[in-house]
Image 1 (tube, rainbow, N blue to C red):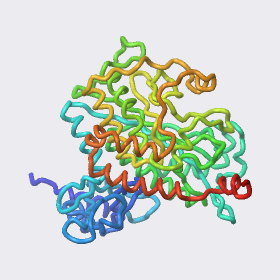
Image 2 (cartoon, rainbow, N blue to C red):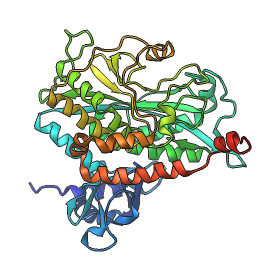
Image 3 (cartoon, helix red, strand yellow):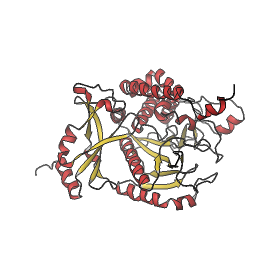
Image 4 (cartoon, one colour):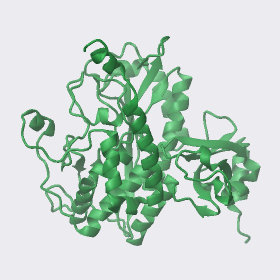
Length: 446
């Protein structure tokens, strides 16, 4: 029996659904989705060679303005093809970055695939459940950003059903869109800040989980625009309210499907491997901050500040504990919740770096300090000695990454060099800007 050509089979299947074009999507160094529309009929070219883009026009490729390696090629991953509900006739495709016929070392998806290949050598698989928190925003006539729902004004708004009723059209549109895209939804709720929501869906293998989060963001942007508002991954848009995290629930399985992190005889149900993984995360936490919390605004979330709700969920100290949300790492029934990332991160790079740090802990046989069994915010307020603290701003986080040569070597020097160069420019630009706060405090003071 002749073998079925998978590319032609995909063309036939999509054509039968009325698809005529493919949105070839990759992400830049900032984690922002980029791409172009190409004809479905030429799928063989997009799979084997890739859709072409001017390399220097994309943040972080490191590609020049001339020569064979000036062109960025996004190669379609054929298994990712699926119709987009908000773009009739268009299918979405995830792309891997190539240049000069070789995998591009500055492509963050290639970065993650490299880390996962290290796991595969051990017979392990990384599973991740990603929890997206986000804000729904609007701009007023003066260009000021505010929550999209003017009636969303409770001081402690978590699980507010009235806000969910008012915004049911958006939430149900998200439900329908994500379901059509193959997401297995688990819950939707109003979070702890005004205008803030969280939508949870089923965990997946790490690469698929990262791809799915990128698709989630694209869907949310389209649905929010349809309903006259903006889907925002800005970590902390409002001073007096909590910010948004992007928590990673992580577990490992071996070749037989057994949980590598679990040990039912341990008080936290964690194995020795899990403890070493945690120790690696804590040891490299300063450097990981740059990749998991990569914006100036990220460090407004990662702060010991009061909020209107009276609660903050941001991790500040390098500690871990059993179901302890005041720690950087929370253990939950034999799995690990990494609470550092926020939704402004490049999810591929953040997962790759997190995995690299954890593997370093395993390879070195690191042992963490005893788990934390208290509220670290209360401990801080009482003036007691605290565990090590995360960097206070992006500049300090970039310095921590630049000095962590072990993590840079493990993650990838090419990507990290591009990341540091671009993010240092961002930090310098912010540092040299004059804010309204400064004008208000200093303009007529002296």
